[in-house]
Length: 576
Image (cartoon, rainbow, N blue to C red; front, top):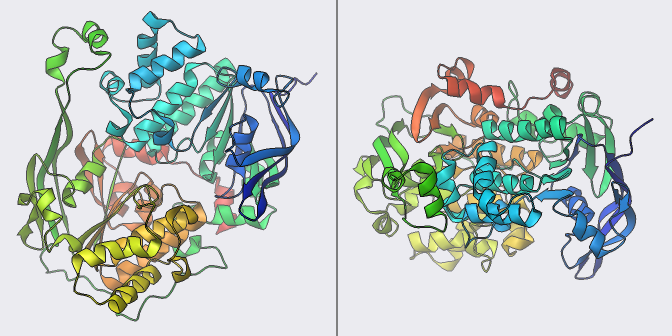
């Protein structure tokens, strides 16, 4: 006799009220999940996968509604009334949100939020909650968990915030976990630990997981069944191996073809209907072998002083002993990093969340002062210039940064045109309005952004379009060095392919130097010549990309490479 499914979804339809009428986001979706099963819903932005997940647990935005359909959890109709939904949400069904910073309370420490979640679910009393909260942080592989308990969300990296959110979801020991892009922004080793943990919980406790993702490789590694969504409908479903190796729908075939993997060239990732926009005529840049390095960094270190005092200070003191306050006053984020970068060269920096890679990039960009070490750019020791003064110097425009969160780094009150214009008007205030407009349009074209979108505000742009505005903003002042911090981490694979191809074309045509900070080893392999591998603030391995990834010498580098999700070999052959 077949066991009754834990979750049953029948003919679910969801729409949203927008100016001009209602828009269908989900149209007739049906699926089921057994206890202990991990089911993937794969699709790109706008496909309806997140709307489906939010609709299941009654978390739609105010302008959203369920038009029809039925959702049963353990035989109970979740749409029967608010009390039924409230009784199930949290204890029965837990949710991991896509944006961890927005989901965490900015004025409460991580420890307090975990303790609140434990006590609200009834899984731990006031006395036991602190110890259990620490166990949860360690379970999701957060280093120095005692320190992190006292930290606030803004003091943690995006990856760490995501892990805190996963720990909070597991606190109530639910039966079903809905994970909306739970590993976006996480490094491959942490991604593997998180997914391994969820997989083990499914095997040992019967925890079922609904995985919402655009990462086909991740779904291939952890899910036995997969649903592929496009335009609000499930266009293909079945055993994961079968869907990936023998996709019937053209949309599924495009998703698989656009997924970066070993042995694939950048242009091969592009959808057949798309191409890289042409750049202005310019000779392909050739780096000089004898030229002095554009950038030279020596002994770069950064130590952050930890603030004393917190709501949990007395508990930690009892746990760690009387010397606890003395031993951890300083956090050594970066220790003795050295590197050189030639003009036109491309350097990748990889490592786990909290490894110091973003802090290193911010010090090089003079957005953050180093504790020690030197930063020499084009023969000038810019590390001696305080970051506040460098931002006003004439050399500021030569080093530009593309930030990790495209939406968060854009002023919501600025149109795309004004966002791109802002750094140009500061760098070259004497330019006429006509010249400024021409430069903005050129930068938009170089970044692959349709100039028709320049009048739109950030919330009116897709994630890929927001990322291209960020790139155009960096290009408009014609920099020599572009530092890109996870520029494609939140993008769909097809949009990522377009952005990466555009960056590659810019480097070849304009002679730009890149420092690319990323947790995606496949992106580093495609985009960079040299790579630094960082762990706990230190460089553990460095060299040519082909050498480091082909014959790694450090155990941590091997761990990173082994943790990368791969598509089945037959899928690779078919896509090729």
